[in-house]
Image 1 (cartoon, rainbow, N blue to C red):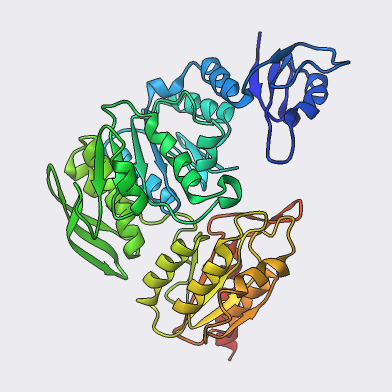
Image 2: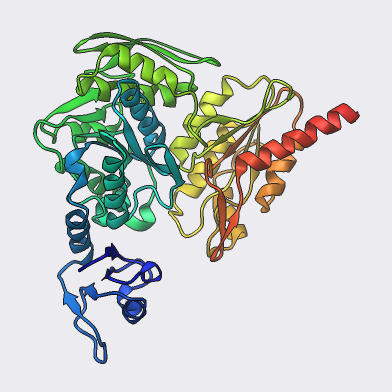
Length: 470
């Protein structure tokens, strides 16, 4: 009897079935003997039975497709017992997922959440290992949600997860598309293939399931023509759900929204135009699922923060403002800086870097955006991984060289944050972008504890202390 489905040989326990999947760098088949030694009852692989292997071997055409089917079968298809809402796109997935969760909870629909920040089952929350986990972990989380009494699951669905069959066999009751901008081209190759990966989520929908789509986005407009039941939203263009009035302030966003069911009055403490899109997306989802307007309005208003998403770190006693955000694409950084520019009483100082072993095309684009919209730029490390941090910064610098905005380099991320806050003038706004909620920095093969929010808070405390001494 099989005790579990596992694709990491290090996690194998007695009785598990080990699925040897192919990764970007390794073929899991090289760990088959290790899995057997740890107690695996059999190995599932695309490769032929290796000479000298002393155990059960099951050869399949596609190990990832097989793993998804095995996991769903092992955990008895929990998505069939939940209202499952998937959110995909480049930017806004996490915030929109939190907002949809807020609406469902307000409506008395107990919900689990799977996001790049954390996985929540009932009252238990764990730090996310990746945006969308591998199919065995995903199916296990959903089964735990059912066991804990959840009636819904709101989840981010990454392009990697779709391409690698992690969400195969899951029944989605609604899917949401936020936007598509340059990202992950190291994996997908080009924008058409990146878009094709995203559209797979909508091909999984039943004809009666709503596809909630941002048609201000060029790719969203394309997508809306291919789905059976589009529910569109937009700020600038024509759509099913659009604001008749929109106010952006330091108190958040306020919208009067026209829907096919009538007028919604929405208030959210989240800041900026990007969050106005996220609020619209969540409201469109609630409308498409026929939830009461009062539930939608209250649910959206109740979500006052999303970790690492335009998160204000400074307080009333600080003479500078500091904000942390996950923005790690040029489009996300543009939206972040355009929003924060409105609230900067002094200079806007941007601290950011770019991840190593990831899409290199966006690096100069992010540099150009930062230079155009900031008063000062401080380039630093993000998660350099196996790349030389200095080489990554050189790529970013190509976007800054033709701009008059002053910029400097401090590769030590902690020192960059501390320096930016310590040297800021009263009234300045320091924006720390790229890592958001993350609790580690990946340098080489090491995952080192590091949190932008914690470092920023410490720097602010030091600044306050020096101010009192002065």
